[in-house]
Length: 445
Image (cartoon, rainbow, N blue to C red; front, top):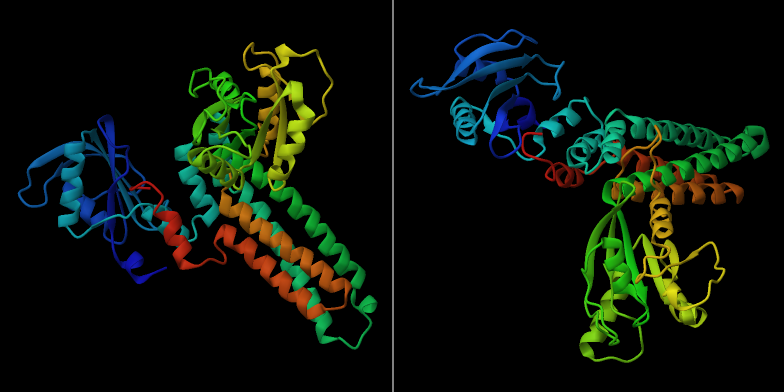
């Protein structure tokens, strides 16, 4: 922990901005009790709610009356002495109290500084600290429950357990290097190979769960793509339940990206309508098609909309464009204009005009979003998924190097994989990333 964090006392309004029945001013640091005691005119008893009158630091004028709670280090959220003053929720009064605390030696807290101190003091790991922000920002019950599980350590426990296995494999591998003259079979080669394979399987399961947790937190980024007049904008309007996109019979009507957020069974989806893909078009339309291709590069899902009357031909034209998209769902639109047909598992027949097939489409989208309602679901972030992907790459490289007898390379890849897992919980992390993470938090948290 930095010197400034251990020697300074911070203060912030911890309740939501605006008026409310109750407002909270929070202090943390070595002088938290003394500053609060001066403001309240009395010594605070640890872990007891005490009725107090808070007065200005300069002239002693009464600001407000309320309740004070004192938590002694290390048994507090931050691991430091903490005082919370529960007062009337007037922004004016709360700001007066905050200013009075500053006059007595406290410093206004930076965004996320309370959680950052909890992290530095070992009260939370980094994934748990991020889960606090996710819990505050949760947009539905499922997301809130997943964030709560991450805050309770459901994600961190699995990461730490996997990291411990990689560390054990690394130690075993380096021990084998020290006895390089011995046949690998006599040094437990089968156990090493089996351990790497088992860790890889466990990592794949955790990565899948983390990707689902990331989608539950961030929502699914789905891009509507297709040829002109396939019905992309009509489908967007049907899913959104409103006329968000302009629909005409003129090819090239959609020129720019149009974003719409919808919810399907508690899963948030960001739908992006894009310009129709074709070889000609004016300069503006060509720019719209370029933006559509760029949007596909960061899509979780491509909803490829086909005119069902020419589905095979249009699908063939779109295939190269969708090669790098993780998931593709083919929509045979305009189902009211052609006879019923059988489609593959990766396709569905709908009519954006009549609503035919939309219920099935919503159900399919919820499933593709990886929505989980079970007790094991936890929240995760894009950086967690990226770290797990790197760990998987290193573990795969370690297995390949081991098979070719390159034990030094295998040990190094195990170390890099272990470090990638450590980035998730903060066991291994650069200071600049810490700053980026905690500055995204609310002030007072």
